[in-house]
Image (cartoon, rainbow, N blue to C red; front, side, top):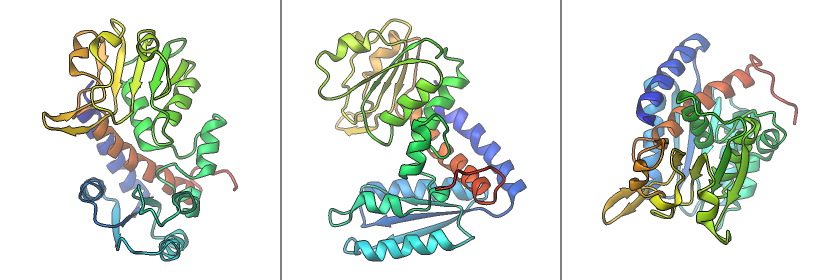
Length: 279
């Protein structure tokens, strides 16, 4: 399942929408100087620039107080020049992550983490949804994977991937099972999956003998090991699966493309092109 090709097409579509809408702005906030987070932020800005979205890159010291961070968010909330706000996680230990997430104006929450947006997803009325789950669903649609009535197993229960993708699969009428570190017999569950989404951050957690023949496997993991980049699923599972995303080149490009699409959607909400629920 070629995430790169689909992501490139989505970027082209976003570029056309940006041109029609006019000036769009995306602001990111990075607290601290973690090299991995720096790479993620730079890639997001490069992608935004490519499609014509103005990007504002805010870098704050590791020692920045929670109140200082909240003040910067409040200023971005009030400004008409910014359509989307993204606070790079995780935050330093002295900052209340939940309070920061709630501080972002829901209509500008391109990460889809605010409780209002999470609640809308839970209710089956999605507004802004986390980018990785959106990208996963786009891949499934692109390859015409039948979800109605399918057994879908999600391994991982994070707020960023596991829980939201489970809700999106439910809304497409799949029968969804969520597995996690306390699941007693993981292989028994995964072998029942017509669609298997693995998002745990644990290298090669799912081996080829845990995958049902002909299943669709979405590997969200990107793990740096001595052997190089590997996913949460053993690459040998490609010999068993009917469809499977590679690592790298599968879900990763789709996440950034979906973030750009979320920024366009946020701009439409902010300018009342689309109706956003009152908070």
